[in-house]
Image (cartoon, rainbow, N blue to C red; front, side, top):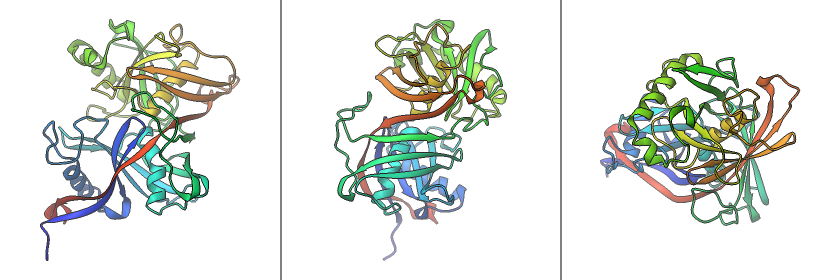
Length: 364
């Protein structure tokens, strides 16, 4: 019997501090326009509650991962990240997402895209959005993905099994350069900024320069129309300078207010993504901010506390706690090559696996 709706296999997975819907690439239309219509029907909107879809009404839960066998010889799977803006009914592939990346490993194993090894499984992921790669190490005792463990991430309840993410060649992921403007510091609208792209294009600003303490809650910052207007003015002016073009309808660059650490971390942050203040911090956003802290002359000078040694573990504070980033530097290299590698530890959990339904006429 012909059905009025079409079912599509998918999984709902928490990756890091985000939640997304994961699809096999072969289960979605190849045509981008048709694919995006289907995905908007999955997520729902434009109502704030997304009552006719499975979105969560927030950028951190309106995320999609599309995963399939890699077309590259040096990777195991291809991963395309899509950010859905349900209120405007737009889908963007302009950025990576390191949080959702954490769920790609378990998804690839459980979908049979990668064979699990005993104890742990290494998976090389090609991040299609930027053509960069990341090595994931997933715990697989007995060839089965292990979700239980003792690794806790601020912003996520409880603890889970660790997933190591070792990023490869991520400098200039979206802009073509670690320092997209060519300078470690710029002045826009009378405010000094540092523009960094080490996996995520981020504009770093001192909170004090915008009349903030850097201790405010996300709700308090979002409530300031003056602050949001100033941030957006700076963001729009830097779009072309960062090789991103007109960013008025783009989710990058992110805007990050920094201040001295409040607790035992190395820098305190409030990240706008780009118009909503993150309840914690994105993985690659944290990598870019930590990178700024290691570049002499950036706006973090006198704000960040930087540990000694060539391998630096940076605790990036955020509204829900802190996030740890491991960076290896070469202080003798030019600034563009100052940071040699970056790694983080995340967790993930499959929440649901099944079928999502969309109206047949949309799928057709």
